[in-house]
Every structure is written in C-alpha cells, then in structure tokens.
Image 1 (cartoon, rainbow, N blue to C red):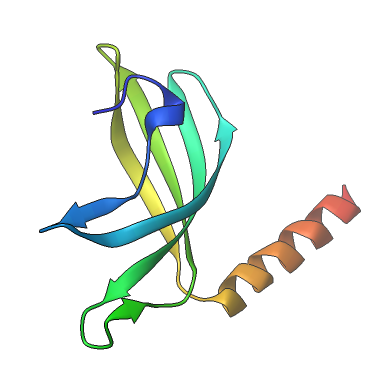
Image 2: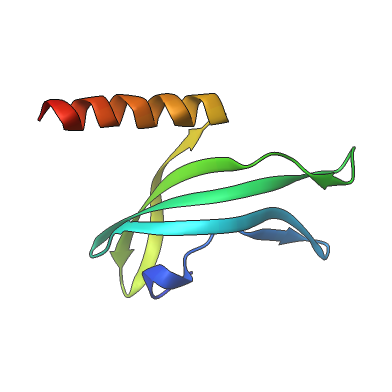
Length: 95
C-alpha cells in the first residue's frame, strides 16, 4: 500500500500485461482523507488493445502511515463526464 498520495495509482499488471493503464491523475485533496481523480484505460484482451479513456474518483483514508481505499465512483462514459462538467459549471456560476 502507498505511504504518500503521490504513490497512489489505479495501474494494475497481471502476468506481465498492464490490465489497467493509468494515463493521468489529479490529487483533489490531501490529508487524512485524500481524493484523487484518475484517467485510465483498460486492456481489451479480445481486441489486443486498450479501450477508450475512462475516469474514476477515489477516496483514501490514511491509517497507520498508509492509504487505504474507502470509496470510488467510476464515470461510465465520456458523455457522463461532460454532463458532470456542465452541471458543476452551472452550479458554480449560480453561486
């Protein structure tokens, strides 16, 4: 497990193949509770290539010097990501 927020990743390798490839991440908050937005893609075994970009928001709690995963929300498509952006922008503009 990771000791710092910068070490946290969604990358996953199985039998020498990177099944989940992390493309980018943005640490949204740090501390005892850390929130990170990841951009990643999954390996499609049938096609032998990576699929489209995906996004996930992960929450971690630091306990005993290590970050433990506590919650996650997967954004299911580019369209859903765009809808989240539009909605948040509208709410921010109203504030």
